[in-house]
Image (cartoon, rainbow, N blue to C red; front, side):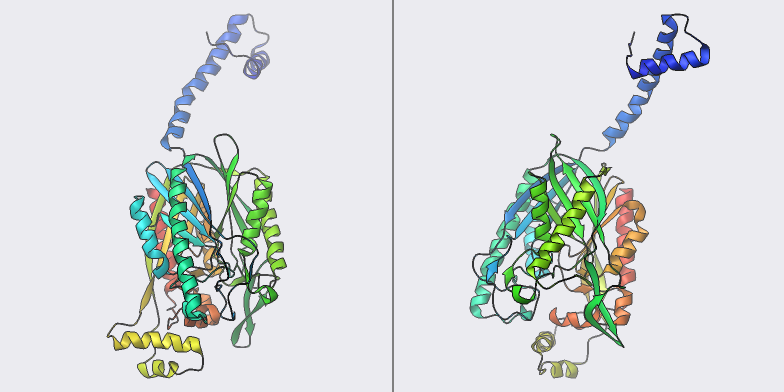
Length: 485
């Protein structure tokens, strides 16, 4: 006979006594306990089948230091006049690999302003083939710090570079690609069973930067503008119960540092958040995944001290999530990837482009010169661009929704609303950054994110107003695919 002691036996005796009076003998208790135990055993196969239906998630983690040696030109601001002078915090490239069943995905967090298609696509293609990954399974997410080195073929026309500067950037770019290859391979080799938990905190230093002055939109601080203050957090625990990794995100530019600290190498507030978390949770690797907040800046901003303050606030938001119960994340790992075709307005006629090529503004001249070279070579002018998109789902508890480009906050807020049941985690600056990705609202309002930023990317625009509908439709299709796989 199966013997049950403790709480189950006590509960059975109390139930029998209340409903049938004192039991007449041991056999009555035993009969009741048999019914109780057999009921539990009958339910067990269903629980076992549910557990067996989804293979356990495996996670691999790797990190490499990518801090440059010596002075180098820093990305993000056209106003800089010379290379870097000193280092605030080391720059890192981190990889976290997920495996569930036959599916594998690698998310790479890169301390840099951004990567272009020309810079990153050949490296990603080589690593995808080498490690037998599916298209879109290797995602590089730029942190968007404006205090990391310029990279080859990435907005280089934005900077006043000497031949010596260009050679330094060439060497650093090759070094970074080698570290990228190392970190991806090491993360895939480190795959181990893991337990995942998800939660969301809140940090309030992001502020919309679009200020309305009459019929113009300028840079500034708009406390009434849209922002996304959510801080998504994913805790990765190993088989021994120790925290192996802490993933966190935020939708805000990495532009805390300027002024007297303009020439300091730094990962900005994101790096300081990592340092706080790794000091508080020894043995854990903190990994930042940039959100969709391209029209938000940190407030206040301008100094290295501001970056440290924001890092402390963001670390506190993450630690607050980790200190409370979190929702378990388990189930099948699913990936859906696509590239959306986003149309531009018709380019200006040749005579306008020729006029621009004689402009006093070097950036307008550079854009026009690029278009004239295409025309003279008989090549078509860009009518659209391809933007990488992905949905990565783990069970029913978490879905990463990723887009390339500098994505404005309207996309974050809209995707969170329409995909709320899928527990979305929004990632911007994913795969590559061809330019800003404005919403319909911002296209109608104009301003930097809609129009003038395209000058630095060498593009005549703006986008056509239909791009938001195209992106929502394409992302909805990706979400349907990962739900139904």
